[in-house]
Length: 512
Image (cartoon, rainbow, N blue to C red; front, side, top):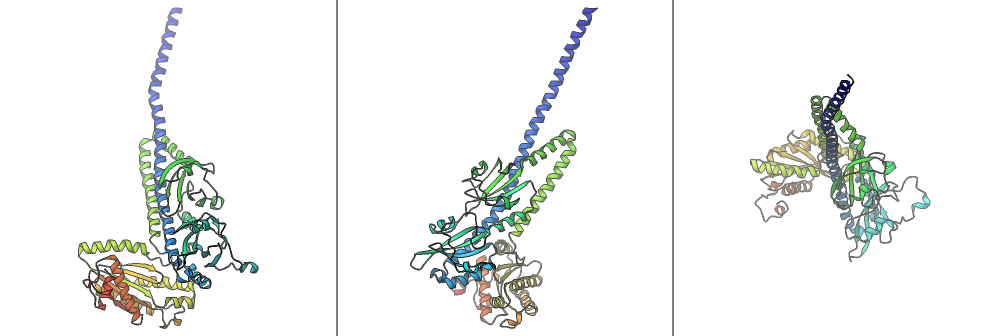
């Protein structure tokens, strides 16, 4: 009996071992699949956030590139100004004071001589400035941007610093000035206000787990969307993630940042200056997302699939909405809320191609506010801005739904008339002119004509020209003619007696 019990126990133990082994064999694939799925899910989330971060980094880099490019477009004509080249400092001072308020992205615009003395500045002294210090020259020869500017033949850029005149965090963008003998006499500098870049990042309304930063090639953080006051101006050169960015146009990675947070990041380099835009997503957030998906996947697979599909549609919609909003902001004039010059170029290319393909007419009106400088001088720039906004609104209300209104620059605006011949465009343009003439503007009684008025030039494709640049130039010729004939009127290009076939005419040479 004892032997039977021992044999039975032996069989029982053997069966138990087999069951455990079978259970282990059954569980191991699931365990292996779980770990594989966990790693795969985590890697997938990292890849997705890296790609979306790279997209955002490229968008921000594009915006900052536009800021920098526009700075070069500003500095070059200033450097070639006669008063600047002849070092007529009082005249340069007045010149810079006159133009600086029009450029909100710069905390100052200055002319610096070869000794590093700021000889002229657009920004007026602070109201609480010490009178004893007011007359003293500010010398910047000890700054990196001075050294680079004096050794550069073109655009150069300095390091992060607090402006010596403004006190704002700035980076100086410079362009050399030569006199008429070719001798270097200094340079003009625009103190690029980094708070503008900072505001661009803050306007993005990014989630708290996403950090966007702009750094220069020496590792100095220029702007950051989270805790900017704490991190702006700090050096991150020794951070491994930063060193991996140097010399590359874009890329992705994973690094533990200086704030002790591990992040998956993507970066994009700027074109004109050695700066980098870096977008990082907290790794803890990504892992939390991955864990949630794993739990839901193994508990209720099908509901998770539906939730995941809905979630990605929702996330994709948000990303797409943000992208479209950012793109739209990049095409709008911030003052008048009209489309800007960049949008005009895009639309003209598209509409001329469409008109050529469908053999339709396309008309274009160039509009200029008459004696606007006089209005500004008499009423102040703030009232001038209000007048610009009012004119923009009236033009928008007077045009058709199919037309597009743009701010060309300064006090010039323009209208693109889709599928409109010369007569139709002239009729709408006359309505615009009349509406402006009849509108009431504060302080307009001081204008030479007693009213705030506009002059308009109109050109039509293909009657007057067959190219984008030609359409703009021909409308400008009409506008110039309207100004010559007394203002507050409209003129069309063909009324000058020229056609698109007059290849030897003076006007057509400017409208081909």
